[in-house]
Amino acid sequence: MFIGHYGVALAAKGIQPRLSLGILFLSVQFLDVLFAIFVLAGVEKMRIVTGFTAYHPYDLYFMPFTHSLPGAAIWSIVLAFGLCLFSVSNNPTRRIFSLFVALAVFSHFLLDLPMHTADLTLGFSGQDIKFGFGLWNYMWLSLLAELIVFGFGIVLYWNSNELLHPILTSPGGLLRYGMEFRVSQEKSSSPPHLRPVPDP
Ligand SMILES: [Zn+2]
Image (tube, rainbow, N blue to C red; front, top):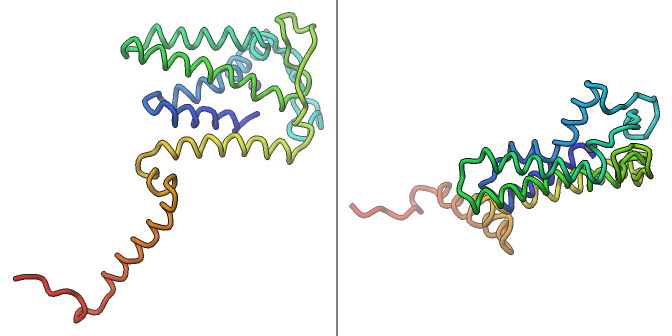
């Protein structure tokens, strides 16, 4: 999954508005950031195979340290612990933020699972059984899955926004907003002789 990961970051921001969106963006893509570094270092491996999936040409054939169940769990704890260590906020808030960061990192693995071809492992060897439900083999289904998760994040993010909240989230809020706007327009456009005369 690509853009869909950011949906999780937006949803987390909606639930926990004081947590930095930048940190959440980094958290949801942390496994891919590490994967890019590990590929450059020769620790994990990928190759480009034209037509490998309908969605992209990347054969991600060896990435047990970033895209395995224990790998994802460990990196979740590492980033959350690092944030906890360097955070300046007070203890209870710090713990909640760290939990959100850990969940955001691990969500990457969970969202990759339906998308990837069988390249996600349960262990570090890279030789054990590989998982991935292969949605990337279907272009439009992949795109739909990305947009659904991203859209879900956008909705949760907007719902937490105080400016948009009364309009978009209350029953009939949008209709009421439209009527108020129309009344204010009519008042301002009525001929001068129909406008109320202000008291001297
Ligand atoms: Zn990934």
